[in-house]
Image 1 (cartoon, one colour):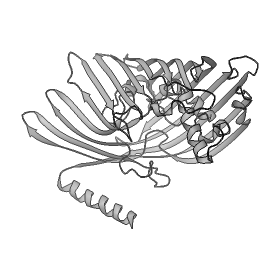
Image 2 (cartoon, one colour; image 1 turned 30 degrees about the horizontal axis):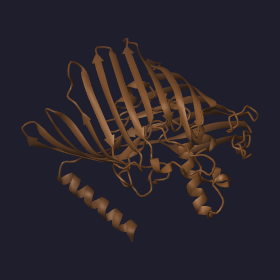
Image 3 (spheres, one colour; image 1 turned 45 degrees about the vertical axis):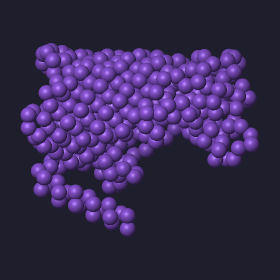
Image 4 (cartoon, helix red, strand yellow; image 1 turned 60 degrees about the vertical axis):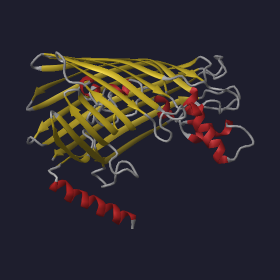
Length: 421
């Protein structure tokens, strides 16, 4: 019954959209992908003898599959605007992500998971309200930085990587967000954004996000700077039986530049991050943020569900990563199409529960892509990528007695078709 009502509501919206001169748009990207993964690891223990890095066995896997969004996120959207007079306009964007290989929505329970914004523009610039992309991303109405940081943007498939694979992890989108984009002043545009949180807006018990950025365009040069801040959910402090981790807010400092020399466009991006939850997706890939990961040490006297909740909270609070990432890429036309290539490197220290550095992690990426246009709206693509992630740990009691390591090598080969409408 609920599904029928949802379908009816969407169809009604379409009818209103056409009557109100609203633009219907979208992207459909479907292709084939082959991935080879190999993971090797050795144990590292906590001070109570609990094996951490060794929890993930050595393994390798090969997969061949049909995928959606290997090159461009498959999506469907509605957008429109109204002229209010005196240079003022009001507009909206409602955008949904879905998987073209299955027809499923990308995010359960959200019709417009990619963007749902209302905006007001004028001589002062433009203000956006709602769910939207972060400034540091390369998507949506306000995601300016990622587009100029790499020829691949945030990346194609998982292992045909852009700059984000060698930098601090970031949330691509936030709910309850306000953003401002200024008019252009002598080639410079300013950006600001603040996300209030999800469950308890503007409270210290929820993640809050803020960012400031600027882009300067001068002929063939394009330069961008951005600083962002994540006020981590403080309710995750003080949940561990042996440790009382103190959350440190995450900061990133970003600089990107590109130069178009005519036959090629080259991009360089650099980031310094401090107290990030993760970087290069390494801790998440190992499984450090899984609820079951720490349940054995979540304390006696609790139910299984309480232990999982305490363990999940602790994992978000206990680890912080400080380091830097670099990404160099280029794009040029040859053999009837467009070529893209990029390399990246990341180095970071891992801090555990505020006790100091307990490990080091690195990431390396190599990506190559090719695009061939069949028309203005339809394109064939193919690409290959390599990502190596590794981490070395000392024992969590601060000694070097139980040294451990983890390494993942991943290869992707993809080919597909993208159609824009």
